[in-house]
Length: 358
Ligand code: ADP
Image (cartoon, rainbow, N blue to C red):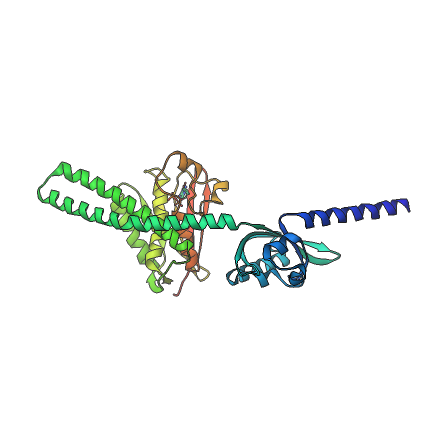
Protein backbone atom coordinates (compact mmCIF):
# COMPACT_ATOMS: atom_id res chain seq x y z
CA UNK A 1 0.00 0.00 0.00
CA UNK A 2 2.79 2.36 0.99
CA UNK A 3 4.73 1.42 -2.16
CA UNK A 4 1.64 2.05 -4.28
CA UNK A 5 1.26 5.51 -2.73
CA UNK A 6 4.93 6.27 -3.34
CA UNK A 7 4.60 5.28 -7.02
CA UNK A 8 1.56 7.52 -7.43
CA UNK A 9 3.36 10.37 -5.68
CA UNK A 10 6.40 9.96 -7.98
CA UNK A 11 4.13 9.90 -11.01
CA UNK A 12 2.37 13.06 -9.92
CA UNK A 13 5.65 14.83 -9.32
CA UNK A 14 6.98 13.72 -12.68
CA UNK A 15 3.79 14.96 -14.42
CA UNK A 16 4.12 18.26 -12.55
CA UNK A 17 7.77 18.56 -13.60
CA UNK A 18 6.87 17.93 -17.26
CA UNK A 19 4.01 20.46 -17.10
CA UNK A 20 6.27 23.14 -15.60
CA UNK A 21 9.04 22.59 -18.14
CA UNK A 22 6.56 22.38 -21.05
CA UNK A 23 4.63 25.47 -19.99
CA UNK A 24 7.45 27.70 -18.73
CA UNK A 25 9.75 27.08 -21.70
CA UNK A 26 10.58 30.15 -23.80
CA UNK A 27 10.54 27.78 -26.78
CA UNK A 28 7.08 27.23 -28.28
CA UNK A 29 5.85 23.69 -27.50
CA UNK A 30 2.92 21.66 -28.70
CA UNK A 31 1.62 18.12 -28.40
CA UNK A 32 -0.45 16.75 -31.25
CA UNK A 33 -2.63 13.72 -31.81
CA UNK A 34 -2.56 11.40 -34.82
CA UNK A 35 -4.80 13.86 -36.79
CA UNK A 36 -2.18 16.57 -36.20
CA UNK A 37 -4.62 18.45 -33.95
CA UNK A 38 -2.94 20.40 -31.15
CA UNK A 39 -4.08 18.97 -27.80
CA UNK A 40 -1.59 20.76 -25.55
CA UNK A 41 0.31 24.00 -26.18
CA UNK A 42 2.30 26.46 -24.08
CA UNK A 43 2.09 30.23 -23.70
CA UNK A 44 5.19 30.76 -25.87
CA UNK A 45 3.32 29.27 -28.85
CA UNK A 46 0.36 31.60 -28.25
CA UNK A 47 2.75 34.58 -28.03
CA UNK A 48 4.56 33.48 -31.17
CA UNK A 49 1.33 33.26 -33.22
CA UNK A 50 -0.56 36.08 -31.52
CA UNK A 51 -3.66 33.88 -30.98
CA UNK A 52 -5.23 32.84 -27.67
CA UNK A 53 -4.99 29.27 -26.36
CA UNK A 54 -8.66 28.64 -27.22
CA UNK A 55 -8.14 29.84 -30.79
CA UNK A 56 -5.22 27.46 -31.32
CA UNK A 57 -6.25 24.28 -29.47
CA UNK A 58 -8.01 21.79 -31.71
CA UNK A 59 -6.56 23.20 -34.95
CA UNK A 60 -3.40 21.95 -36.69
CA UNK A 61 -0.19 23.94 -37.07
CA UNK A 62 -0.71 23.69 -40.85
CA UNK A 63 -3.66 26.10 -40.40
CA UNK A 64 -1.03 28.71 -39.41
CA UNK A 65 1.59 27.73 -41.98
CA UNK A 66 2.56 29.63 -45.13
CA UNK A 67 1.04 27.61 -48.02
CA UNK A 68 4.38 26.74 -49.67
CA UNK A 69 5.47 24.78 -46.56
CA UNK A 70 2.28 22.81 -45.96
CA UNK A 71 2.94 19.84 -48.28
CA UNK A 72 6.48 19.24 -47.04
CA UNK A 73 5.46 19.49 -43.37
CA UNK A 74 2.49 17.17 -43.96
CA UNK A 75 4.66 14.61 -45.76
CA UNK A 76 7.18 14.63 -42.90
CA UNK A 77 4.36 13.90 -40.45
CA UNK A 78 3.17 11.03 -42.62
CA UNK A 79 6.69 9.59 -42.65
CA UNK A 80 6.87 10.02 -38.87
CA UNK A 81 3.55 8.24 -38.27
CA UNK A 82 4.61 5.42 -40.61
CA UNK A 83 7.85 5.16 -38.60
CA UNK A 84 9.92 5.86 -41.71
CA UNK A 85 11.54 8.62 -39.63
CA UNK A 86 12.28 8.55 -35.87
CA UNK A 87 11.97 12.37 -35.77
CA UNK A 88 12.16 15.29 -38.19
CA UNK A 89 13.47 18.81 -38.36
CA UNK A 90 12.55 21.55 -40.79
CA UNK A 91 12.64 25.31 -41.22
CA UNK A 92 9.22 26.73 -42.00
CA UNK A 93 7.33 29.99 -42.09
CA UNK A 94 4.18 30.61 -40.02
CA UNK A 95 1.61 33.38 -40.42
CA UNK A 96 0.70 35.26 -37.24
CA UNK A 97 -2.73 36.67 -36.39
CA UNK A 98 -1.59 40.14 -37.55
CA UNK A 99 -0.63 38.46 -40.89
CA UNK A 100 3.10 39.00 -40.40
CA UNK A 101 5.50 36.07 -40.86
CA UNK A 102 7.52 34.20 -38.27
CA UNK A 103 10.25 31.73 -39.29
CA UNK A 104 10.67 28.69 -37.08
CA UNK A 105 13.01 25.76 -36.65
CA UNK A 106 10.71 22.80 -36.05
CA UNK A 107 11.69 19.61 -34.21
CA UNK A 108 9.12 16.83 -33.94
CA UNK A 109 9.31 13.38 -32.32
CA UNK A 110 6.57 10.81 -31.94
CA UNK A 111 5.72 8.96 -28.74
CA UNK A 112 3.05 6.62 -27.39
CA UNK A 113 0.60 7.85 -24.78
CA UNK A 114 -1.78 5.22 -23.39
CA UNK A 115 -1.50 3.29 -26.64
CA UNK A 116 -2.13 6.38 -28.82
CA UNK A 117 0.44 7.77 -31.24
CA UNK A 118 1.22 11.40 -30.37
CA UNK A 119 3.79 13.98 -31.47
CA UNK A 120 5.82 16.49 -29.50
CA UNK A 121 7.08 19.57 -31.36
CA UNK A 122 9.29 22.45 -30.32
CA UNK A 123 9.36 25.59 -32.47
CA UNK A 124 12.29 28.01 -32.16
CA UNK A 125 11.93 31.51 -33.61
CA UNK A 126 14.65 31.99 -36.28
CA UNK A 127 13.16 35.08 -37.95
CA UNK A 128 16.21 37.27 -37.25
CA UNK A 129 18.60 34.72 -38.69
CA UNK A 130 16.42 34.40 -41.80
CA UNK A 131 16.37 38.18 -42.19
CA UNK A 132 20.15 38.35 -42.01
CA UNK A 133 20.40 35.50 -44.53
CA UNK A 134 18.07 37.40 -46.86
CA UNK A 135 20.20 40.57 -46.56
CA UNK A 136 23.32 38.52 -47.31
CA UNK A 137 21.65 36.89 -50.34
CA UNK A 138 20.47 40.26 -51.66
CA UNK A 139 23.97 41.69 -51.20
CA UNK A 140 25.56 38.77 -53.06
CA UNK A 141 22.98 39.03 -55.81
CA UNK A 142 23.51 42.79 -56.29
CA UNK A 143 27.31 42.58 -56.20
CA UNK A 144 27.48 39.69 -58.64
CA UNK A 145 25.13 41.39 -61.09
CA UNK A 146 27.09 44.66 -60.85
CA UNK A 147 30.37 42.82 -61.48
CA UNK A 148 29.10 41.12 -64.61
CA UNK A 149 29.04 44.20 -66.86
CA UNK A 150 32.58 45.58 -66.20
CA UNK A 151 34.07 42.07 -66.44
CA UNK A 152 32.41 41.56 -69.82
CA UNK A 153 33.92 44.87 -71.05
CA UNK A 154 37.39 44.00 -69.70
CA UNK A 155 37.16 40.67 -71.52
CA UNK A 156 36.24 42.35 -74.81
CA UNK A 157 39.14 44.85 -74.50
CA UNK A 158 41.47 42.00 -73.69
CA UNK A 159 40.40 40.15 -76.83
CA UNK A 160 40.94 43.31 -78.91
CA UNK A 161 44.46 43.74 -77.50
CA UNK A 162 45.15 40.04 -78.15
CA UNK A 163 44.08 40.48 -81.79
CA UNK A 164 46.36 43.54 -82.21
CA UNK A 165 49.33 41.77 -80.62
CA UNK A 166 48.73 38.76 -82.83
CA UNK A 167 48.68 41.01 -85.90
CA UNK A 168 51.93 42.71 -84.81
CA UNK A 169 53.47 39.31 -83.90
CA UNK A 170 54.38 40.49 -80.37
CA UNK A 171 54.94 37.07 -78.79
CA UNK A 172 55.85 38.25 -75.27
CA UNK A 173 52.85 40.54 -74.96
CA UNK A 174 50.63 37.85 -76.42
CA UNK A 175 51.63 35.37 -73.71
CA UNK A 176 50.81 37.90 -70.99
CA UNK A 177 47.47 38.85 -72.47
CA UNK A 178 46.52 35.16 -72.83
CA UNK A 179 47.30 34.60 -69.15
CA UNK A 180 45.20 37.64 -68.34
CA UNK A 181 42.40 36.24 -70.47
CA UNK A 182 42.52 32.93 -68.59
CA UNK A 183 42.24 34.77 -65.25
CA UNK A 184 39.32 36.80 -66.57
CA UNK A 185 37.64 33.53 -67.57
CA UNK A 186 38.12 32.23 -64.00
CA UNK A 187 36.62 35.42 -62.63
CA UNK A 188 33.72 35.23 -65.10
CA UNK A 189 32.89 31.70 -64.02
CA UNK A 190 33.08 32.63 -60.31
CA UNK A 191 30.65 35.49 -60.92
CA UNK A 192 28.40 33.22 -63.03
CA UNK A 193 28.32 30.78 -60.07
CA UNK A 194 27.34 33.58 -57.67
CA UNK A 195 24.59 34.78 -60.02
CA UNK A 196 23.30 31.21 -60.45
CA UNK A 197 23.37 30.52 -56.69
CA UNK A 198 21.39 33.66 -55.94
CA UNK A 199 18.86 32.73 -58.65
CA UNK A 200 18.42 29.33 -57.03
CA UNK A 201 18.09 30.83 -53.56
CA UNK A 202 15.42 33.28 -54.67
CA UNK A 203 13.54 30.58 -56.60
CA UNK A 204 14.27 32.27 -59.93
CA UNK A 205 16.14 29.43 -61.60
CA UNK A 206 14.63 29.08 -65.07
CA UNK A 207 15.25 25.89 -67.01
CA UNK A 208 14.42 24.85 -70.53
CA UNK A 209 12.57 21.72 -71.48
CA UNK A 210 13.96 20.21 -74.66
CA UNK A 211 14.76 16.76 -75.99
CA UNK A 212 18.44 15.97 -76.18
CA UNK A 213 20.75 13.00 -76.54
CA UNK A 214 22.75 12.47 -73.35
CA UNK A 215 25.43 10.43 -75.16
CA UNK A 216 26.09 13.29 -77.63
CA UNK A 217 26.32 15.78 -74.78
CA UNK A 218 28.84 13.61 -72.90
CA UNK A 219 30.92 13.00 -76.03
CA UNK A 220 31.15 16.69 -76.87
CA UNK A 221 32.09 17.71 -73.31
CA UNK A 222 34.74 15.00 -72.99
CA UNK A 223 36.19 15.94 -76.42
CA UNK A 224 36.55 19.54 -75.22
CA UNK A 225 38.26 18.41 -72.01
CA UNK A 226 40.70 16.28 -74.00
CA UNK A 227 41.64 19.39 -76.02
CA UNK A 228 41.93 21.74 -73.04
CA UNK A 229 43.69 19.22 -70.75
CA UNK A 230 46.35 17.60 -72.96
CA UNK A 231 48.16 14.80 -71.14
CA UNK A 232 45.18 14.01 -68.94
CA UNK A 233 43.43 10.69 -69.55
CA UNK A 234 39.63 10.81 -69.92
CA UNK A 235 37.99 7.44 -70.48
CA UNK A 236 34.38 6.97 -71.59
CA UNK A 237 33.58 3.54 -70.12
CA UNK A 238 30.06 3.23 -71.42
CA UNK A 239 27.83 5.77 -73.12
CA UNK A 240 24.38 4.40 -73.85
CA UNK A 241 22.30 6.09 -76.51
CA UNK A 242 19.37 7.76 -74.72
CA UNK A 243 17.07 10.73 -75.20
CA UNK A 244 16.20 12.80 -72.17
CA UNK A 245 14.03 15.83 -71.67
CA UNK A 246 15.32 18.92 -69.87
CA UNK A 247 17.86 21.71 -70.02
CA UNK A 248 20.82 20.48 -72.08
CA UNK A 249 22.99 23.50 -71.30
CA UNK A 250 22.52 23.27 -67.56
CA UNK A 251 23.04 19.50 -67.45
CA UNK A 252 26.20 20.16 -69.49
CA UNK A 253 27.30 22.58 -66.74
CA UNK A 254 26.76 19.86 -64.12
CA UNK A 255 28.87 17.35 -66.07
CA UNK A 256 31.59 19.97 -66.59
CA UNK A 257 31.58 20.84 -62.90
CA UNK A 258 31.95 17.19 -61.89
CA UNK A 259 34.75 16.60 -64.41
CA UNK A 260 36.51 19.83 -63.34
CA UNK A 261 36.37 18.74 -59.68
CA UNK A 262 37.68 15.29 -60.64
CA UNK A 263 40.67 16.93 -62.39
CA UNK A 264 41.17 19.41 -59.52
CA UNK A 265 41.22 16.83 -56.74
CA UNK A 266 43.25 14.01 -58.34
CA UNK A 267 46.81 13.69 -59.67
CA UNK A 268 47.49 14.71 -63.25
CA UNK A 269 48.61 11.18 -64.10
CA UNK A 270 45.47 9.40 -62.90
CA UNK A 271 42.61 8.76 -65.32
CA UNK A 272 39.08 10.10 -65.05
CA UNK A 273 36.30 7.75 -66.14
CA UNK A 274 32.88 8.75 -67.36
CA UNK A 275 30.00 6.33 -67.77
CA UNK A 276 26.36 6.67 -68.71
CA UNK A 277 24.09 3.66 -68.15
CA UNK A 278 20.32 3.06 -68.25
CA UNK A 279 18.74 1.93 -64.99
CA UNK A 280 15.03 1.57 -64.13
CA UNK A 281 13.72 4.20 -66.56
CA UNK A 282 16.55 6.60 -65.79
CA UNK A 283 19.98 7.36 -67.10
CA UNK A 284 22.77 7.26 -64.52
CA UNK A 285 25.85 9.33 -65.38
CA UNK A 286 28.97 8.81 -63.23
CA UNK A 287 32.31 10.61 -63.11
CA UNK A 288 35.02 8.67 -61.30
CA UNK A 289 38.42 9.87 -60.15
CA UNK A 290 41.23 8.21 -58.18
CA UNK A 291 42.11 11.29 -56.19
CA UNK A 292 42.16 12.23 -52.54
CA UNK A 293 38.54 11.26 -51.82
CA UNK A 294 36.17 12.78 -49.27
CA UNK A 295 35.64 11.67 -45.66
CA UNK A 296 32.16 10.44 -44.61
CA UNK A 297 31.72 13.47 -42.30
CA UNK A 298 32.45 15.92 -45.14
CA UNK A 299 30.18 14.11 -47.62
CA UNK A 300 27.18 15.32 -45.59
CA UNK A 301 28.09 18.95 -46.25
CA UNK A 302 29.71 19.20 -49.68
CA UNK A 303 26.38 19.87 -51.40
CA UNK A 304 25.73 22.86 -49.13
CA UNK A 305 26.17 26.42 -50.34
CA UNK A 306 29.69 27.87 -49.85
CA UNK A 307 30.99 24.61 -48.35
CA UNK A 308 34.60 23.64 -48.98
CA UNK A 309 36.23 20.72 -47.21
CA UNK A 310 38.85 21.76 -44.65
CA UNK A 311 41.73 20.58 -46.82
CA UNK A 312 40.53 22.71 -49.75
CA UNK A 313 40.19 25.71 -47.43
CA UNK A 314 43.68 25.40 -46.00
CA UNK A 315 45.27 24.80 -49.42
CA UNK A 316 43.46 27.92 -50.62
CA UNK A 317 42.19 26.01 -53.62
CA UNK A 318 40.21 28.03 -56.14
CA UNK A 319 36.43 27.82 -55.88
CA UNK A 320 33.82 29.16 -53.54
CA UNK A 321 32.14 25.90 -52.64
CA UNK A 322 29.23 26.60 -54.97
CA UNK A 323 29.76 24.07 -57.76
CA UNK A 324 28.18 21.04 -56.09
CA UNK A 325 25.39 23.10 -54.56
CA UNK A 326 24.46 24.47 -58.00
CA UNK A 327 24.81 21.03 -59.62
CA UNK A 328 22.57 19.31 -57.09
CA UNK A 329 19.93 22.03 -57.40
CA UNK A 330 19.96 21.79 -61.21
CA UNK A 331 19.60 18.00 -61.06
CA UNK A 332 16.82 18.28 -58.46
CA UNK A 333 15.07 20.83 -60.66
CA UNK A 334 15.15 18.27 -63.53
CA UNK A 335 13.56 15.56 -61.34
CA UNK A 336 16.86 13.76 -60.83
CA UNK A 337 19.23 12.87 -58.03
CA UNK A 338 22.94 13.58 -57.44
CA UNK A 339 25.08 11.57 -55.03
CA UNK A 340 28.66 10.53 -54.32
CA UNK A 341 30.55 7.43 -53.24
CA UNK A 342 33.99 8.20 -51.95
CA UNK A 343 36.86 6.77 -49.93
CA UNK A 344 39.65 8.92 -48.54
CA UNK A 345 42.86 8.21 -50.43
CA UNK A 346 41.12 6.10 -53.09
CA UNK A 347 38.95 8.55 -54.99
CA UNK A 348 35.38 9.64 -55.60
CA UNK A 349 32.55 8.72 -57.93
CA UNK A 350 29.91 11.41 -58.40
CA UNK A 351 26.72 10.18 -60.11
CA UNK A 352 23.44 11.70 -61.15
CA UNK A 353 20.30 10.09 -62.50
CA UNK A 354 17.71 11.69 -64.76
CA UNK A 355 14.47 10.35 -66.21
CA UNK A 356 14.67 9.30 -69.88
CA UNK A 357 12.23 9.36 -72.77
CA UNK A 358 13.71 6.63 -75.00
P1 ADP B 1 34.47 24.33 -55.36
O1 ADP B 1 33.94 25.05 -56.55
O2 ADP B 1 35.01 25.22 -54.30
O3 ADP B 1 35.37 23.18 -55.71
P2 ADP B 1 32.33 22.42 -54.98
O4 ADP B 1 30.97 22.67 -54.46
O5 ADP B 1 32.47 21.98 -56.39
O6 ADP B 1 33.19 23.71 -54.66
O7 ADP B 1 33.00 21.32 -54.04
C1 ADP B 1 32.87 21.41 -52.61
C2 ADP B 1 34.00 20.67 -51.94
O8 ADP B 1 33.90 19.28 -52.21
C3 ADP B 1 35.38 21.13 -52.43
O9 ADP B 1 35.92 21.99 -51.47
C4 ADP B 1 36.19 19.86 -52.53
O10 ADP B 1 37.09 19.80 -51.48
C5 ADP B 1 35.20 18.71 -52.41
N1 ADP B 1 35.18 17.93 -53.66
C6 ADP B 1 34.37 18.12 -54.72
N2 ADP B 1 34.62 17.22 -55.70
C7 ADP B 1 35.62 16.43 -55.24
C8 ADP B 1 36.34 15.31 -55.76
N3 ADP B 1 36.07 14.81 -56.99
N4 ADP B 1 37.31 14.76 -54.98
C9 ADP B 1 37.58 15.24 -53.75
N5 ADP B 1 36.94 16.30 -53.19
C10 ADP B 1 35.98 16.89 -53.92
